[in-house]
Length: 560
Image 1 (cartoon, one colour):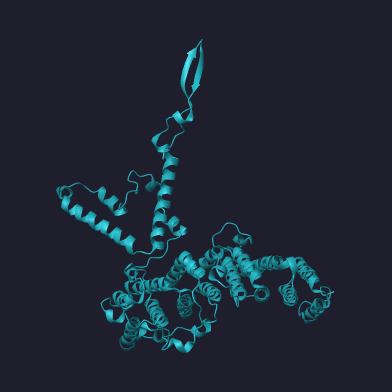
Image 2 (tube, helix red, strand yellow):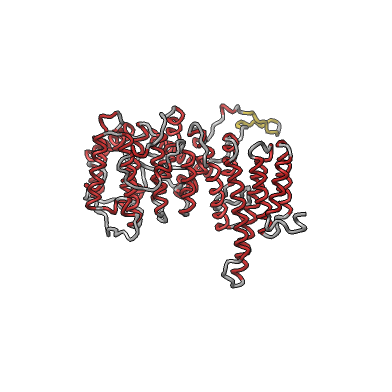
């Protein structure tokens, strides 16, 4: 009836009909209505966009009523069907846009806008549905959606987004992250490990390093929804130097053992994505605000003495990033990073309430207010802010100094020795694979498996031998001093560096060594000799005596 009389656009009558139906039947049968609407949506998937949007909006009303009770086994079916139609809508929109471009029509067609209506209806339906589910079902839906998020460059995916191209894939990622933000709103797990399990954390943080500032913002907002268990985010909105944090009335609980364990396992992942997120060149003010809020929420919800030291190390590394500028960032981004560090250390100093530490932070902020206001968030993020032409490394009175912070925290139970170890982002598998050398380097005679052997030493080893080089080689005292210095640095590193960094570095070396050994063996190892080692000729026939495996002699490369 609704099809024949074209009552899906507008759909007020259709929505009223389904509301009557949903309220008239028993709750245990409501999932049958939802299945019928989904089946009808599949049947009309190539219909006009506004017709499909009308069906989806009717589905939203039915789901809103059913979510108050139980919709049985159709939870994943609803999400799967709607995600499939989201992919269809993006495909239709991009196809129409490509055809309009090929016909020299560069204006956005009305059909494109109608497809946006379909997409918004799907996002609203999934977000509303997910946010009204019980927490145990909501966590499953979060995992389900993250498993469907497409990846740029992937050759295959469950949603078949490889046919959409990079633009379509980015659109799908953006819209699915918007769904995730709606689903995670109001979600409060008892422990962070329950809210951010490892299979969910890795795919969530991956888009936070993509070259799309809006996508990175959505990822950080989702992370805030999951970390903030006491509704403190509204109090931290914006980025500023807070005169008195106690006025915010921050709510927090004692750090649980589960949260301490979570930070030991996954803290480096969070630090890494905050640090690398500050380096993105397309960051705008909102990105810096969200990065600051991320650090503040970690401090409130997850920071014990060990985490506080790690967060200070990250802040110092960000300050060095802006001062040294090895990544050639624009001046606005360098000043923005400095402002994030100032706002966060001001917040942290008041949260841990160590007088000497607070005094150092306050002194630097006062100096910046007079001499370098562009290092503070209230100035740098203001329109038409005058930025400096260069940052001088010698102006130490404008910077937060590691030695003074370590001295101020020394008598307060913090492991200040770790502050002297510079923060280095955790190296992931993708980083290691991207830096893997070519096969020619791997099969070179000068295989880099000896400690202290690097590329520069390989280059130097091929230099021409002269009198000076021989003289240096004879000078054993200099070599002994160099070896002692190397050993001292290694011992100091293992004494002061965080366990996570040492473990990550050792794991990277072990994996790289294993990969190279495997490649060498694949290239050089020949099949072992035949087990028939001894042969005797009797009456014109050859008789073989089988040699036991444990007596066989294999090439040296086969034995390890």
